[in-house]
Length: 469
Figure 1 (cartoon, rainbow, N blue to C red):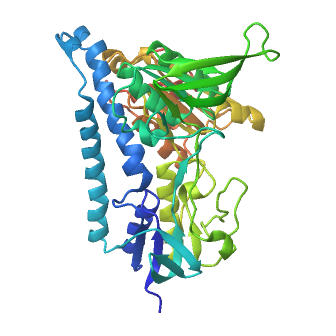
Figure 2: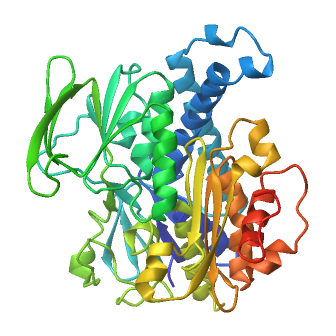
Figure 3: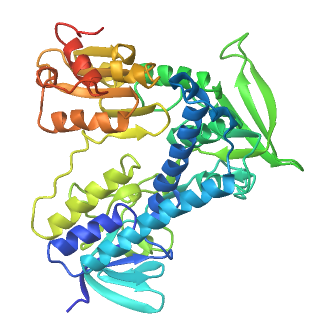
């Protein structure tokens, strides 16, 4: 008889959620974690600490830029106590990781401390002990990728991990990569007074985001003081006595696509934010015969099962967007399948959020994707300059863009820039999950004055027209 019905490897948002759900369904469950604290990358060195710093610096920005407009004087004299801000961030992390510990105890999930390997199907080795299980769920997450030839020391040349705990606020920072992590952390330091330059290989920021939204987003960030260098290929990053030197080649404005010029810039800190890759090192998957994909991901079927019976995988370790909530949903779906239930996973309705200020949120298809598919669609847009609540808080620069099927009016996607965009997007997620049309959203009464009225106005714009446009 096996020691456990299920052993989960990894306690991030995919692993710990899966372990708790499995226990709720009556499965005897254990979760293996190598760190001293639970929660994985997200709670310890990712989502949660970064959002704490984003919140702190957003409030600083409000104090410096908007308090006086509202009649609150004396705000410009505010100063940043960096050490105390970092302690606030650590307190937020500790509160959340302790929360996972409590939930494990409440749901009777056994915690196994140490780094895991899988010597054989049905066996998980932690330290020198081997534990047996009917099923094993791999939820080991991902790690930062680094460009070839660049050495990260997490002091001057850093990843997002180092960006969360720098010894002091740098005067200048080069961010390599204009994806979510680079822009979030770049905006944190820009609001702290750092001169931030974002260098991106592609010709646009936020790859995969709706192109119109990406362009609007970049304009807003430029207004906030961030600089962008697009179409640039980083060649090297070298430590210097005072920081680091970044070299890149860039297409010349005088002869686009024909001539490349070399550029060198020195900065106090260089943040390498060029993406993440699955972390499966040490598990022994090759010896087990687990089928892998070219980019280092584990191949799974619709039920999250690998080709080896009894071994499942979820989250950043498998294909799909590297998002904490996607991992959680896959974890729930996997363990419900193990328990004989129907595990629901809808990859067409997974929201994505960039937690800058303003926030950017997206779900479903972009215009570019629909054009590539040859699908007929309509677009309804509404500027937040027409939203009373947004104007009242000095955040009228954003918009809501809704994309619907031209014939059926069914919502295919929605993209939002504005205050609380990460909350507003979920109205559309629910609508899409139930196959709603834009008219369904348009006919639903929304409270006034709220940001959510902008979502309704975009839905109205898909039909006869928005009221406040």
